[in-house]
Length: 197
Length: 406
Image (cartoon, rainbow over all chains, first blue to last red; front, side):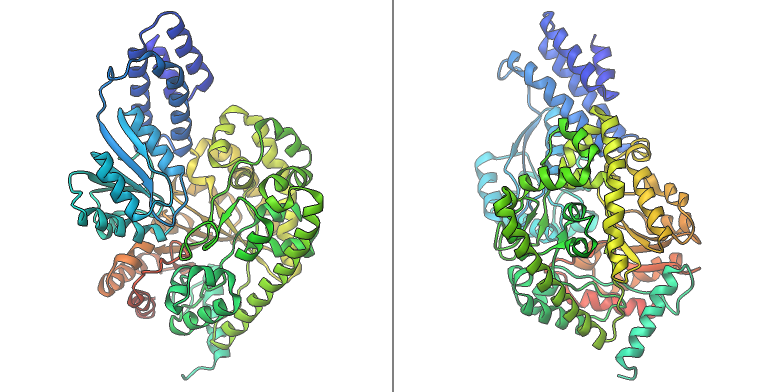
């Protein structure tokens, strides 16, 4: 069953994969195993994206399938039974109200086993700093679509550093981001589309 | 100055037209940046730039005077209003006014599509398009049956608070008409200033990819991408139904003497070649071909990455129009499209923000060595909006570099 489910998810069979996962759970299947299979499938979707075999639409659908299956699977898994890889704090920077890139990244980071705290869009620099102090994330993810986001990212990274938040890795992502922007902003890594981490 | 404004404008126009016609111009033309940098340079807020047309016109004038690109893109901010263009597609005299929705128009409509500074966002934030979901999946049949009726009667009342009821709508449309007049008057004033400064007048109308109407204005990007898998036949039929109203509104610009339309693409980057060829390209291609037959060329902005679909452009007849690329490598694009399509782009906006005088010159030199031979190339920042903090000397560096190596 696990193999069948794995390939249905990877092949973008939304209806088929959700049905199969439901049947498996209802038949007394192991929710932990189900979660693992889904995670592996999402991992492969991400790899296919990196190789240029899949595109953003496949990432969106993959994320949607994962979220749908998790809705009825997670209630069967006890808190603390799944080990988290780490905590990611995620937001779209000040003066940018776009969320699609952030949301795709969120779905994939959760599928990969991270705890993701989404702090929203148009997030002021001060909020990034406050939230980082409060949540103590391992990774801080910043997203932007518009060109104004480039300077917002720079200001946010500077403020985080000024507040001595140096333990967290800073990843920036979004449509207008490239290596030049990474250097300018002083971030640790960049991606111009949501799944290339 | 040795040349008169008129001579300068003529020279620039010839340069741009040569490139667009796949010929070799006297030097590579340079398209300029606009957006956030203009109010920042004039010392006014984004809110003033969007809402106070007198201040905005002065800001544009100041920018045009000091940064002489061949083809400047300084204008008062407006965001794509194509859903309104579809709604008015049967009335060409009105449709042309809907290309861009300005801040004051946004306030009149009370719509949920846009965010304007000082309104929903900070006074110094860029005006932004956000879109949304204003149609349910079980309504595809209605859209297919009569797209103009569906958009007018169902979508717009949901998307615009001030069009929610017919009695509200009456006043809203009248007020919007008044704003169209104010906006076009401001546009004409900028046009006169441009001419007096030696800039050519190249006016562009608009058209759209049918699937992007659905993604941007009806179902939202995420839902549209999912609909393609869930209701493929309906999505396809809906794109086919939208071709006619799009062509009708695009032709309204022809009546005003424009023979070029701008088509910005959004979902192209999201789709695999297979999905692109099935759901996106056939109807976009039809729009471009039909407008071409009417003597209207298309200026397509291939947003994001378009490498995966590059070859499909060759399905269009030679000289169909202009391909402006954002993240697609223009060297590769030029190789594929040379002698067939004029290629525009090449300067990453991040280079203008983060680069130095020397690096920009070096970059332009290297790039032009590869793309200049044979003509048919217009150098341009890969996106028209320069952030407020863009170092001004970098804009000058770009202009100088093109004069040197173009």
